Image (cartoon, rainbow, N blue to C red):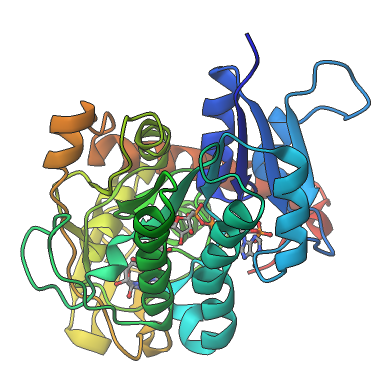
Length: 363
Ligand code: NDP
Ligand code: GDR
């Protein structure tokens, strides 16, 4: 039997790494698009990658960029994929306020470039397309919980760019009959989550604080509420969405909501710290209940020009139509992230104490 061929944009990111692993396990030939960077950016997939000169290689990386049509066209023509997962994006909401034009170029027009490549290359009937849509589309929420029919109200250049990508995906499905669909994914995290997203920032900093390698964790809005799941569960759903008879859009969420403050408290507990809160708003501080040291502070630098205060998804459609449900509980997610970051902090400390700290990234 010939192998199915998948192309993943954003393969070096959190979801790309989990999805590549899943598809390789399923026997796919996996191709990924990586950007040229001055430092290696393949840490998350190095365990999957073999020297291309070795036989039996299932994972192939290509240099390309969502802002460069010609690279996308060349790679898609070469790979002739059965499935394309468009996971690449400037994915940081706060950064999108600083780089709005680049965010629009990669996150909005990037999706269009891939869809156009599918069409121009005559692959409309062969290639299925998955678009990484987001709960950020709901922004200023119009309905609780949010489901596939809830109206959108984006609140950042990132969300506005993703809104374009969402609709162009729907449009190419309706206009050209391409099997194209949106996964409207709520926040999903893991031990390989980018270090500047709030959950990973918290577990990483608290682990370092516990070991004495860092003094304070500075955060923005502690009241923000999110529906946090595990990335490993969510990529399974991305694959499932491309295996149906007809293309449809799905909300992927846990249906459970927690605040940033709660995430701090629970991960602190896992790491062996107990936090006592004092003060309000920008003056709120978290103290180590044992030593009395101030270990969490609010820094308004992390406030966003427009905030998404609350998100809560309703994954009923995914459960009913695809039999999907999130396997990892919120507490298990917190535990896994906290325990992995504690191990990293221990390694980091060991290296520093033994004179190898020049190999470590500074704060
Ligand atoms: P990451 O930020 O971890 O990964 C993003 C990936 O996109 C990286 O591989 C990055 O490359 C790549 N990339 C960025 N810009 C470009 C570009 N111009 N051309 C080619 N590649 C590019 O994101 P996640 O894995 O967390 O998310 C995957 C997708 O899902 C994103 O589109 C995100 O917006 C969306 N999403 C994520 C959610 C989440 O909670 N994680 C929820 C909902 C949607 P490099 O490694 O070089 O930086
Ligand atoms: P989000 O994730 O913006 O929801 O986007 P992030 O973890 O960045 O923020 C979640 C909430 O926490 C608040 N917050 C902080 N956020 C960061 N990054 N750093 C802080 O110090 C901090 N303090 C408080 C934020 O204000 C926000 O309310 C993620 C990304 O993965 C997107 O790509 C994806 O589309 C959405 O999730 C769903």
